[in-house]
Length: 312
Ligand SMILES: Nc1nc2c(ncn2[C@@H]2O[C@H](COP(=O)(O)OP(=O)(O)O)[C@@H](O)[C@H]2O)c(=O)[nH]1
Ligand SMILES: [Mg+2]
Image (cartoon, rainbow, N blue to C red; front, side, top):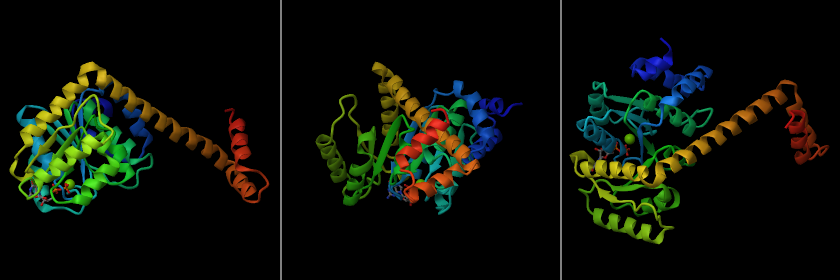
């Protein structure tokens, strides 16, 4: 059977193999992804982001249990250098997640944060498509919300959850700088600790001061992930946001934005690669660079020249 058919049937080994091909930027992956694309677009894609140690893995684990109780299948992508799947293992997490690995309704994939030729966001998106085409109904993406790469990863999600914890003033600042605008739900985890209400209030104030969203006002949910507290409310918040997307064409709009971004990214990457491959094969690239360095030609004309030669 073709790998695409096996993936669509939810064959765990075929899914894992295709994900490895994707991570290695293999042409085989591209051809499988072409075949799978028509079967994507069904899943709820949820991003969970926040600083290391804020409880993303614990929340992911708890949300998985919650969605499984509701009978939904779940795919998990951990794009987290500190996650139990990518080294820096926390034994307790490993044991907890193993519980799900015995459940056929859950598929867990960890991803290295470095070394993706086409970019981390592209690889994540491709892996989301595999899970989606394989029929996973909810896809949870866990990622540390620090670098630009991670912010791009979050953009893959339809519902973005930004996690913070009490008593980290600087943390809120970091959130403010990066991902405040894309948060659909705020979680204040470790609400068993002092200061949870203060953190929630700070977030509330930040939202009021921020650019403001007219379409959706992000709820702030307090959780104690280790005790399963607030998880049902969080799951409800996710479903409410998904329902919101279905109203008034928001899902359509996001889908279009995401398609545009992905298409332009792919086009840019491949067009550049093809142009450079040609120029490198016949030595033009190095010669041109040499000429620019020696002021024999200016870089503006050199680019025009190269593009004209390629018929563009
Ligand atoms: N007190 C408390 N500890 C928590 C809570 N949620 C997670 N933790 C602990 O915080 C640590 C980091 O959690 P983890 O889920 O691995 O965080 P991640 O790095 O964001 O994925 C672990 O020791 C968890 O048991 C919580 O709600 N309250
Ligand atoms: Mg983690």
